[in-house]
Image 1 (cartoon, helix red, strand yellow):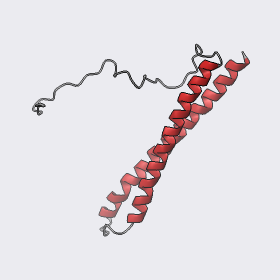
Image 2: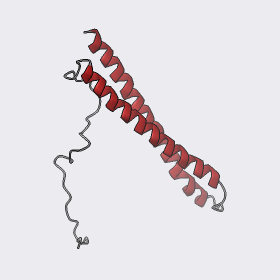
Image 3: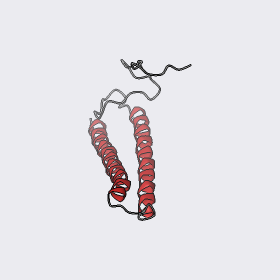
Length: 118
């Protein structure tokens, strides 16, 4: 019983960490998207603020790497969960498809007037 309780605590913290990284990534991406728009609206040369834009893009890359790290942590914890006998315990969180499975119930369809692949 204690392992199950501890497993839930770890899972809750994992989900909180995943959400925090996603929120940070979203916020920085929004900021980065604003920079060139604001530059144009302010009638500034493209050289103004270029280093800021580059640094913001580097931050997105770093957060993307952090996201990969927390996803890898999630996978590793799933293995630990199985190893300690909690494999059948649902720990909640978001719906997560198997990365190797195709999306269920979705298919591509043609668009009126669209081009067809040769």
